[in-house]
Picture 1 (tube, rainbow, N blue to C red):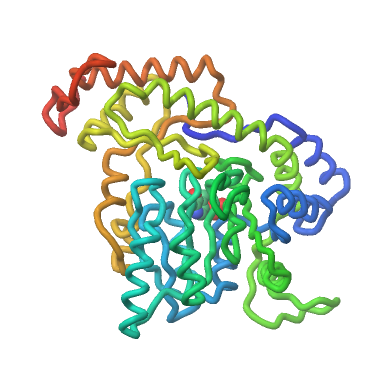
Picture 2: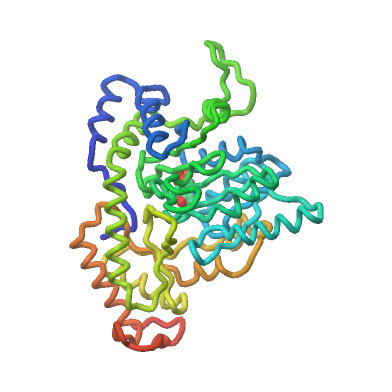
Length: 400
Ligand SMILES: *Cc1c(COP(=O)(O)O)cnc(C)c1O
């Protein structure tokens, strides 16, 4: 079986975990937590980093620090993993689901900008916080959002859970990493993310006060000193020293992981170039991290499902992307801004195995099966076949 995304534990993981076991520091106190935070902050270029139990926990605390609470409105992408929006509802705030734009598939900042400008003119309620998600490893366009921040004092929190290592390469943000543009940034180290701690997350910020408050909230809001004194409702959200030990080892391999992801994406680009699919976005001003290679098929969702099925028979795990949040039961009543883009992205989407341990030979086999699937499904003869023709099969049927 070739999995969609699997962790790559190829470095000092065992050695560092062994050090935790030998020293007895296995819980949320220990030298690896501090080291992971320091090295992570240095890597992404933020002044502070606060390790958390998960990416979702990081988002929850970051949103709370950004001012999200009962009665506030937080703009977020409609097209993202559900944790982005769940974290908003944990704070008591209400999500405003904003549609995607076609250039990066991330939140349509211009759409939000127009709406906020209109509402502000009419004296209507505007979002208190923008949670910008950088999906699938591709940085989001920030210009319109930064303008909203400057004009209306809206706080920006970045959900960079999928995009560690992605950067901007041109314009005023050139050289900056995702997760360091907003007031607070959040990352995930879940098993399927770019680096993993088994489960974990990170909050980044340049603001010393926010970093202190993040650390405080994630440790049950316990006041310094020997007693059990707490000044507010906090959380048990700290990362363990064992998990941080994995994180330090993974961070050492991050440049190699990013190179591997880039090579995998380049191979898929080549393999799919002549097929009726939309390749993943690649803005000229961005250096994506290519977390999960995802495409849109120019055909009915049923055709995509058939390809998924056919790949599964050959031991290849592929997946559709996320159904838009507005179609997910917990968020069906959320306010929405925008049109059909999120639905269109989901409908015929296909994510392909993108693990860094994926060997070039494995990927070649996979690519061959993928092309076979396409050729079986469609009356399609490769490059120069002329215009796109519909599937041979009737919609909804399976040619097996
Ligand atoms: C994975 C993910 C999260 C949540 O991270 P966990 O560590 O799994 O809690 C949040 N947002 C996005 C976009 C993600 O992909």
